[in-house]
Length: 561
Image (tube, rainbow, N blue to C red; front, side, top):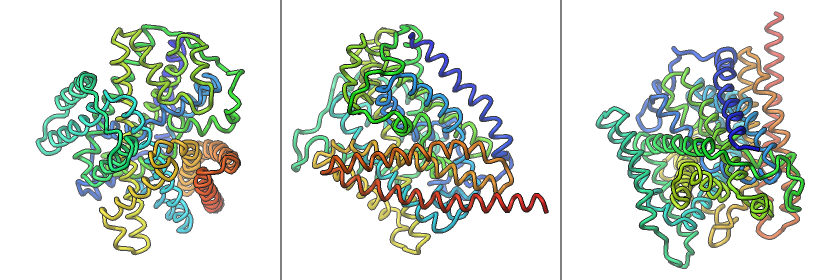
């Protein structure tokens, strides 16, 4: 099959979802009010709460939720064939992710920008809030640990990406100062910042950087993981206008350009998809496609992490409630487009089916590596730039988005710990520095606990991240459904996706428990985490389900009274 056809069909469907379905949800279900005073105005402090231009906020939200997951997940899932991955990404983006992400922003804005975990206390019960926030903390710990390990691996394998990666931090700070302190119009900082980011890619190729083979007894992978978390800890304490917002915005522009380059190359080169639509020769190591497809591809179809970003940082910066559709639903649409091109790169960027089979000989292969190599092959063939430059560009793009997710993730973990301090009256936990140190320490413990002294084996966490992520998405949709019922609005548009993704996630989690038990060794560490998360998720489901039926009975009683 020609990849161009797949790209056109996929992008057309995603656009239709935003143009028509999101408008219906905005007007009939969430009923956005342009006159509602958002928390960015009511609680403005210019650190976490700050009214923001919707385009800039879209850039922050898009890159914070995109990260490396919509690249890694589809790049692994095509082992079952490109068709199942394609269908899940498209329908998941239109009817699952968009409603979930949009809804999390709306629900938080309507409740003083509380995180979805804290919001559960108001909507469901205090007990559910406690259980939910523990699940959230575990998920954030996994997100940060996995992405820290993924970035470390890529910076080691592509030393030419080191200078461009860290230059992006300096560029973001400069843009933040220019826009928010010197009040320079956004156009020129955007143009100059984008040009600088692409110019230093050439510098990175000329001066590739690698860490020493050993430092204080640590291998390069461990060194990078520690450096990354020190940076993320510092970044989480800075005002959002200084680094988080402009970094996410400029990376969003770069992602937009990168997607344009990839899709443009697909249209020009018209590569053939060499992978099968349904793979008849799946390796023995691959788990069953159902339910594992729906947790292997999380970001790019639906992801609980998006709800954390939407209710954790995005809702605190939303200028008008009506901007939630543009930022939330369109943000998930952009991620769907990234997942779609990742599928194309991982199936059409190979010379033959034999080359593709050689890479996908074992479950877990592919991922970011397939995206970079396959995407670079397509770009070099379609646009005419060198394969090496294209590979560096795509690596930098993937690393920067994983980095922005770490920035947001550690900040969100800090919020969670500080919320615990407020809820349980523990003053020391309300301190930002203490909360940040606790968050970073937990992530490092998981990265090295699962990955050994080098930390590089930390990708063992990925399957566990997938199931936890989707369980959280289901729980978030259930909380939104309870809110809708209490408001007397239809809940089926959130309830149906909730039932589907929760069932798949729980089934996958149970399968993983058996696999982790059989493997033994270090996986027992993950086994206990998985077991605790499953139990907590079931308890939250029971609490929220009870609240849902109570609210529905109350609504029915009120309607007949």
